Length: 158
View 1 (cartoon, helix red, strand yellow):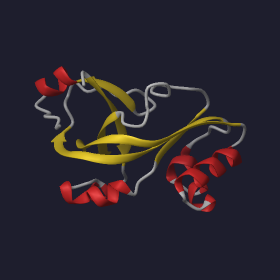
View 2: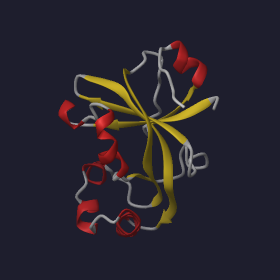
View 3: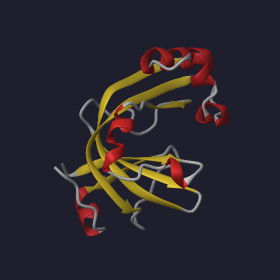
View 4: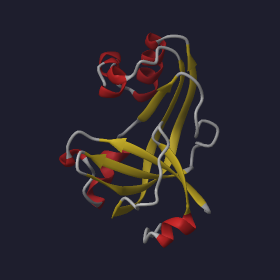
């Protein structure tokens, strides 16, 4: 692999951030999704098996936590927020009320567009501070070249 996708996930508290390889089981049960008014990167790149590096941040810091593979990728166009909630609920298994009440959706002004969802399958714990040179797009995604990651001291296995 010459590059990996990076997804940034914000947390309210440091305690909500993965803290070691023993968090793999909880990660397996996760479902990540975004509602955008239009297609954004990595809409066309994220597929089942795509490598994704998770960057997690909290109020006073951030770090790379896991190298995962994307699984069960969802791409759907939605004409309303209700349609987005229904699509995410059907795909993720979450109750519609819980999707609607999510911090992400409550903070979003987007009413229609596209939903990109995926489930992480843990590959390797990383657990290193965010490299200074890692720049994330406004939508929370980036591409990092593996050469850059190695230069920053981020070892990727396998």
